[in-house]
Length: 165
Image (cartoon, rainbow, N blue to C red; front, top):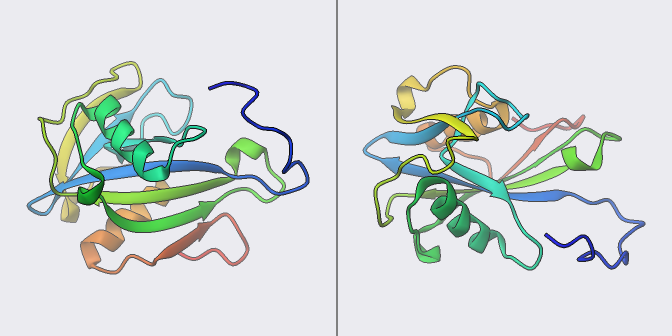
């Protein structure tokens, strides 16, 4: 990513870091990776694929790219089911911790999911929604439980005084 992508026109505005999450599902199960070597929530189970949206990239394109890069699978945009959006952060905290996370689920893809970045994840496994591993990244666990229960709020917030879920 080029350091000059930001022209400074929004210096006075609050900024957030957008990210795309892809939850692969099959027969009551979800594919999760065990984070390692990232410096963030290492040792926690997390979405099979997730990452930051790059400048000039849509969140849908980011989801497709992350699935390819992290799992080696191809997902068409039409096969991405929007699940929820989560605004999380630490009010007054560092800019990097002000986030908007777009969660997608997919039940169709091409290829066999496999760990593509062993330097960033220690394991990749299918888990039944009714028996998720411990620990799971907390803001992702809210989404996973909601998927199992069939009731994911359209918008979630974390780290704010009006935090939902």
